[in-house]
Length: 195
Figure: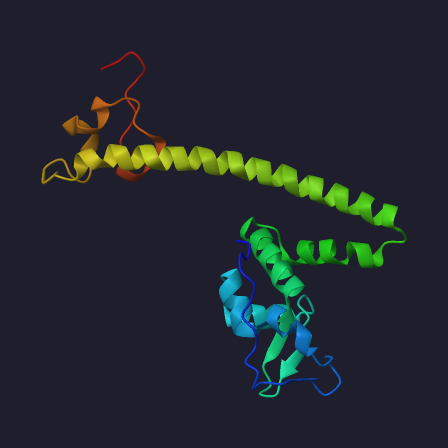
């Protein structure tokens, strides 16, 4: 999810203050571009706990605190969090994400950083394409399974259910029986060319 609207400005009553030297004071002109931990969580579809974990792990960096002690993040940190969230949901490990985030900083030159990042990202693209194929195939099968299971919605048969569902003929009227239905209802697919 990418944020479509900027974060709301911190209330004027909350002056920005530094965190005992750990984070710089926030410039008043930048307040409209800052987000509290709660806003970061809400806008990225994360929990407060997750945002705090990423901060404690050194992945997110607050730019200051309010007088009330609430951490405040710049818009670029929200974008970073959304990207990390998407990567995590795609199955990329936190260690792999951390490596990607550190590549530029640890590289000897811009060319070296680009070479490393390009190679790593190409690997992730390959992994994602494989996952997309699997997810597409699975989604199609599940849709077909839902359709196939709809013939069972009015079933009240106590003789054949649950062990001999394939014997009633309802499921096998539409061949082939989707894989999900074969697995969940233990119904074999009729042989090709058979009735």
